[in-house]
Amino acid sequence: MRKFPLIGALIAFGLTFGSGATAQSALEPVIRVNDSVITAFELDQRQRMLAAFRTPGDLAKVAREGLIDDRLKKQEMRRTGLQLQDESLDAAMVDFAGRANLSLEQFLELLATNGVEKETLRDFVEVGITWRDFVRGRFNSRVSVSDAEVDRAISQTGAGGSEIEVLLNEIIIPAPPPEAAQAMATAERISKLTSTSAFEAEARRVSALPSAPNGGRLGWLPLSNYPVQLRDIVLALAPGEVTAPLSIPNGVALFQLRSIREVSAPKTAPTAIDYATFSLAGGLSETGLRAARTLADSIDTCDDLYGIARGRPATVLDRQSLAPSDIPQDIALELARLDANEVSYNLTSADGQTLMFIMLCGRTNAAAGEVDPATVRNQLRSQRLAGYAEALLEDLRATALITGR
Image 1: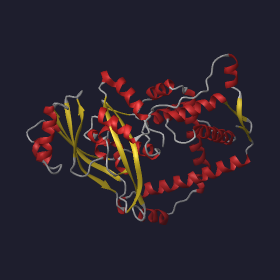
Image 2: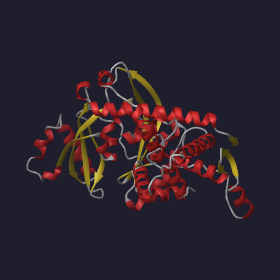
Image 3: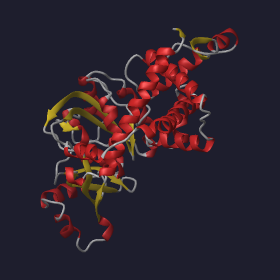
Image 4: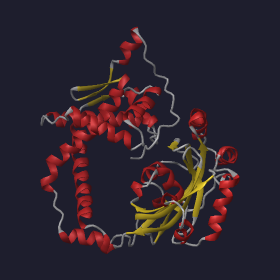
């Protein structure tokens, strides 16, 4: 999804809805799609929601086209009697909020503070989920993926393509519970910046990262290094634009895109990341940081940490190899900027009393022979179903009677 994971600073819309004539005009149809209507209120709600999702482009146009498409989808599905059960819709809304690392209650609260009603999100999710099921039921029998096509797709994995690299600036603002509201307010203000120099000045002032003195500047890094939830957000940015605030434990993260490029001879995206965390007393105090620097100077690889941990409690050292999606977001952001055997000690645990010394042991990239054929088959099937869905929607648009702005 190109809009998540977080709600940031929103666009303020001039259209308001009160009582009397204003309320009446809000409910008047402004667009007619065959036998259905779209009201001014619905348009305003969709724009507000898109702004909350940080959707790029002309939001008025995107809202209009999205609502028209939703009406066409509903009309087509109405003919089949397809409906989503309430419990299925509730679960879908929970999953949708989870993409922003929020509970449904937290997600709805954030939307409400920006004028978006629960029913607006509910309608949006319902159409998306029901349409997906409708497309599968209608076209699944037409989609056939042969073994030869799967083999060909696997053989092309990582070959002859390109990889996206990004040049980012970064900020992490400490946000322990007593300071969380103030940190979020600062982050929301910074998220509105479009000037690189202004962002870098804020990084020098508020960021807790080692890159702060350099304005939060990072070098070129593969986009695949970053958590999955962040990749679409970064791709939606124009140079100079800033992500919405990203909530992490005891902190708020922001990234600004400086540049983006496509490079040849790519690696495949990592399927697993091997990393170790070593707990040090003292948090970010000078004592804790001194211990981290000493530890960094005394080791070369993750295997060296086992000797350091000998004789200490078993909980001091934790080494794991996890799929990128299973790594906590704050740790994943630290690992994104590391190469094998590099370390980070910017994070804390135990309410700031323990410093987390993190070391990247390595990334595992799937070779062609390691790719799961069933996964590839499902991906090819999904691509073809998406093609059928778009073709059907194009036909519905072409034959529909659409009037209004």
